[in-house]
Length: 500
Image 1: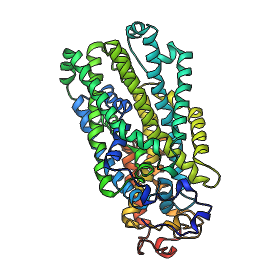
Image 2: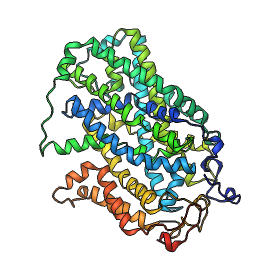
Image 3: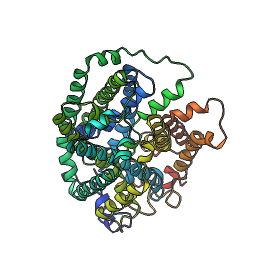
Image 4: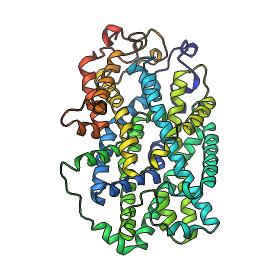
């Protein structure tokens, strides 16, 4: 990795938190990087598998669709991670090379608000686990289990004061952990979590699954023999919604924030195996557990916390698992939904914002957005609204990112110009208009039907969301952006990179 010149620290585009990670501080090995996937493959990922059953698919259809989504995501993640490992950069700084030193704010703020939305949903799940523990402690679990159908709104409706008190406690706990994770120190608390959470995550989720299906063998047989959903034009939109839900859209544009601490590209490649291995496993767990409950009760309970709180025995085991779930969900929330928005804030105002200030702002805004209300509306409503919107919004950025790094720049970046006004990445007054145009075209096509401009077949483009955005934006960008002809470590010039 090339070091930027000594003049860079005085730049208004620079501070210590967003500086390239020095080789001596790139200490995350393959296990630590693999551990990030195992850490975020928490109960919330089982939710996707459970939702597949709600949508009408059987367990093996759910797993195959999820695996396809994982493999497609993996390609984009490897491209993203390569830039982070080689140059030691977080995503907002990498995006300066694609969208311009000021244009980078566009993808940064897109993922900023997406991250805050998911932060609220994850904190809601953490709170469900804490409230369930309290219900067990005061002896009111039988009342919970007696309810005919359990949904994300159940605990809020029956224990509102307790629920929001626990929500506040979960928020403060995550805030304090983040304060102990400054990038200038290689995020020590996050690294520690990434080392131990894989063991906790895999062990706990596997134990719950085995105990669950062993406890209800007859229902498991029914779940395993559920007929496959017949493929027809009528089900294709639902299939595409579920497929899009298995594209890890936020990870694609956030992964460099963690990978920048990786030791080598080789370590990164081994670490990325965590995606297809761990996620496919947890999707299977969620699908079969929900299938078992559906066979027993006639209701497809898809909330991972309520599956444990309502159906796992004995009580002491339920307590242990809920405690573990709360920790796993908190870890997922920190890695996926808190760290990236803090980087985005620092990228916008590098001289004004410290890590601690960014953490404070992200916490406050995450509460204010309140995206958990969408989760509480039901599985299909949540996936067809919030998840589909996120995938549609972030897909075009991913298309530009992949094409730019591989096809346009050939993996060659100039560290000094990333932090310099007027350099190679200044483009047109700090904005790469071509990249922004490619994203705008893709967003217009994906969302146009919502404004009365739909054409025959548009619904399929819309439901494919992330993939549609990647392909449309990527092709547009490849067609209009000149390829870089310089060499690594040179400034290049605007004629080679395109002044617009």
